[in-house]
Image (cartoon, rainbow over all chains, first blue to last red; front, side):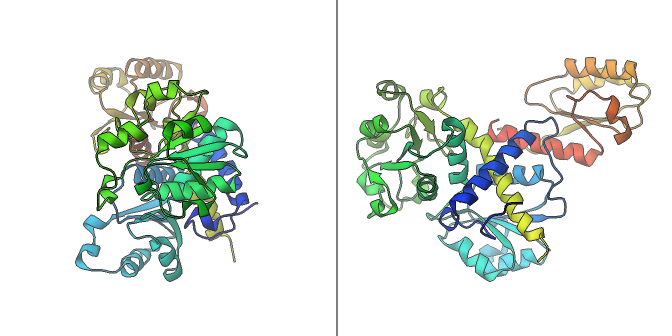
Length: 311
Length: 103
């Protein structure tokens, strides 16, 4: 059986192209499972997974939880609001206390970049990064690329533009790594204040004009404006942002060709994307949500296989 | 958004299942678990259950049947059948998460 080259999923940058293809193949199998009346397999019956969410998240947490349930894993849910973290307990102490309950795998979201990697070096358990600050969100990038692969067949030579708040977006960074690895051409588009300096060093180009970027691409990934990450004003008003970088149906229909629209959710309808676009046939946002479960099942299953394998 | 903690209507079907029908229909706005490991899945019971499931079928609601594994052969394959009530509640929880995620 083929296996992943890594023991943890900390970020896309640690993976190889073969890992991505293996995850996609496995997710394909699980998509077939979740279209059956009984959408559950006994694969991880003896595996216990802790979901540690130190940062608010509804959709990602539910998607992981559903994936774990579909694999028949035992689940421990933990959120920082109910924990000793508020009383000053360190991350390692918290996780070690949870691991004392014989947890095999930890899915963690944390506001600090690098938290998942730090944990992987300090605790004896398999770690899956469900988002670490502005660093990486690997399962989101995997599900985005998987959804695009379903649409296009392969990503080699395809042109993808990522639009919006690139500076605060872990989704953007993980997507750039994954898309580059799969041979796509990547452009980023957004206000200069929301683009990291030296972004070109990641192998992408910058296009400040949204219409030009959309005319260039085969697919556009519209990122959410992340108000909660903004400690200072990065653009004058939301209205101005929407006028310059919001995707509307008239803009989409004015393009030279049809393009595919992605959004990692949750959407600010009427800000970065209009409701008409989000609900149109151009959008594959619902496919992303469904594929999210299959991709997370694949990642958990492949990492658990390494865990269970006799040494 | 669906309520992940909404009540589940759980009913144990017995030999008087015809009498239980009205009560089940009255609870069709809930997710329903029909517990039937002691029922004989003969043609009359399967016919009644098929008609009931059609009556109470509703988008965004789960209908799960609990039956003994030795009855599975005779049960239509498109019905969602599990061996225990715990498993049925787990299926409903998964359905609710799916609906919460929007699919």
